[in-house]
Image 1: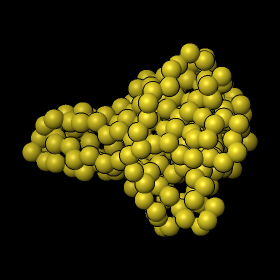
Image 2: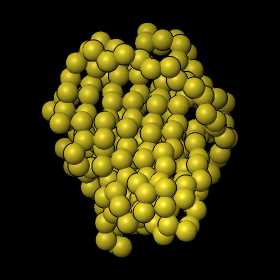
Image 3: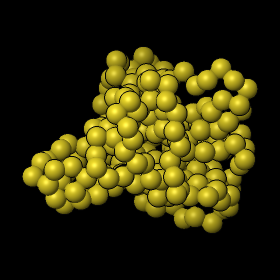
Image 4: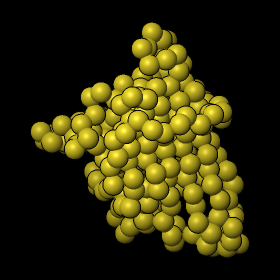
Length: 208
């Protein structure tokens, strides 16, 4: 479901953490497929530090026990220079892992990571190693959304093996007045073994 409105309130966001990294996540090739209707990652303003040659990632982690499940939350404010949409853009992401998604007696460290240049997340370990689906809620506010075509806006995931799949049962919102995009209850189901690349990205795309 896609919603285009200007009604949602801005929640308070807290900075979780960031690390300098020059090798792990690099800006993706925006043109995923060489076709006229290719999906393209929604562009973000980036981090000012990257103009100085420092690549920055923002991440949040949590140890989750299989018998309990848990939620990983990433909340950041990223400075942007000279933007008509404010001095910062804000990101709020939440990934829910259901209980019994892996052996009950195991504990696993889950991490969600984002690059400030493009609207996608990396989730580790891969959701495709789990028994049950994960749920993603994600909001980005304070960015230019004027170029997003409502008919061409979607949320999907794309792996290093070139497999491209969409999430299901999700609600997408583009708020042109508050310069915001939002995903609610994006469900990602485990898939077959051939669709489990380590480099899978989950994010907002605009077809062109």
